[in-house]
Image (cartoon, rainbow, N blue to C red; front, side, top):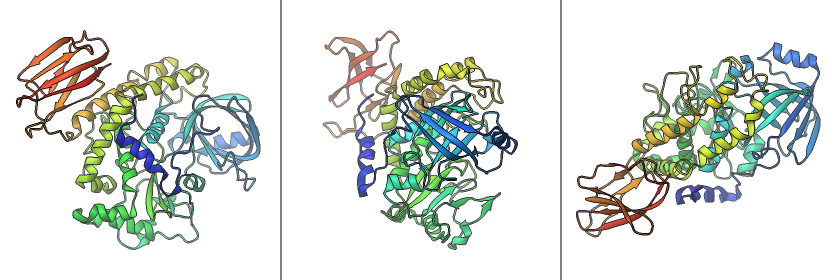
Length: 506
């Protein structure tokens, strides 16, 4: 993988202010270089009850065993139940394990809960895992995750994704405190201004609050959330950045926007006003954004929208307000940073092949278990061939209109064309000289800025092998017979100045 660009490296350096460790290592529970085995031993009657009442939150007592190849640990009297939303009615369900329900104080390597997600709508079984990995690469504090093999009563239940619970332990590990308000924000949590009264934000949707306070519940004080929403929605543009940065970690959130837009996470706050947490960090006095539930990504679609081509600056649904996206993108300095972070991410993680290689690595780890996964076929009749095809092709299920790797390529390509032009350097006579991207490239490059009069391509030992003359177009198409490797690209400008850079071809 290419070296981290400065802007992404800065995200990691910023993670250690105020004594905070925003990116704890995988530890023994979330290692993703192995496939841990999770065993649940439970009374068959209790297991039947779980499946007969899919919307029940009753926890049934079970025995838990975890083996990652280096050790095996068992815990008695853990709670076991279903979790999730639509997965409760799917054939492949998702589960929550609670280590402290029946034994207060019991934990598993500091964790009180474990989420095992069946990923029933994703034929690749890895979209959410890739999205969680992107969060880490971008410097967005988010859940750790890995694939595991689940067995219930010694019967193979399938390949699952183990996703870290966002709770008091989560925020304490990352921010060094857990006494702030932690809100779980679910549909319709649009962060639209409803008034200054904190009661205005205690409204419910169904049987739960849209902004569900998960800590400090006895106080039930929503005044901090009401104030944040007021600042976000009502601060005039000239003062917005100064006032917003007093109450919100905007730097971290801009990286999260890049993650959402690149992965096509329509089920988050930007599009579906859903699935995120806000934590009032008492060390800084600011709200922290924490993503949640990233399975509807990388082209999974229920709306007939091409998420791989959606405008990176016009991402929220038309006719509806999404202030957490729109109010931020209206600030020129935030839009510029978003652009720089997005482009840097594409160059460092997509163009380099890192993201694709990570997906192929995970495919190699789990592929041998797909055929034996008793619930993989689910509601769509998928088989091992569908698993293989899902990386490069659409499937017959209408919500999978594009392969995983196809999506990555298309989203990267379209984003590069949509992103605002980069700032350009000044030549010797004060004339702006062009830059080009992507680099590494495949079949073409695009120039931004004052176009050169001519372009020449040399081998690294100085032999000229291609030359293009005026008029040079913004898109320069390279011949297909060029071998992958490093070349020298020389631009000659109308001022007489020249510029030579290394071009990498994949």
